[in-house]
Amino acid sequence: QVQLQESGPGQVKPSQTLSLTCTVSGGPITTNDYDWAWIRQPPGKGLEWIGRIAYTGNTDYSASLKSRTSISRDTSKNQFTLQLSLSSVTPEDTAVYYCTRLVSGGHDYWGQGTQVTVSS
Image 1 (tube, helix red, strand yellow):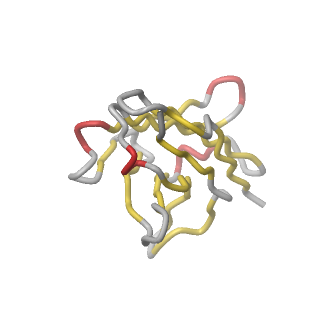
Image 2 (tube, rainbow, N blue to C red; image 1 turned 120 degrees about the vertical axis):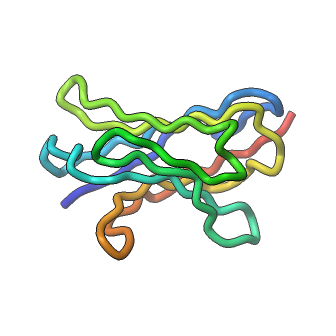
Image 3 (cartoon, helix red, strand yellow; image 1 turned 180 degrees about the horizontal axis):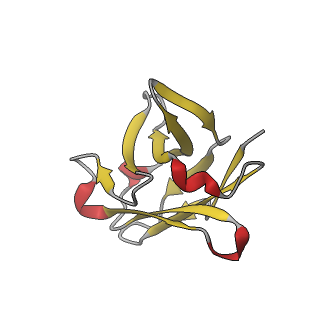
């Protein structure tokens, strides 16, 4: 059973950079065979696509967040992690952030999500 666990600071100050990590466990290290994504849900709103990293290592991002977003992956230490970096945050970036694995037709595994609040 593949498990995803997001981690990071629960609170970030405006203008700072938000950095989150998603640790993937329970599956083979060949997780490079999949595409992975970050998605968020602001309070009272629906899910919002942030971006993804493909099995090739290529990335693509939401047009509205592209200038501030970076997604990467790390397979060192016999562990697979995804990283999300979102710069120049504002209170509008307050949300629950999720990592997810992409398969044909949708998502098959999700993390439980991590709450991030942008506040001074």
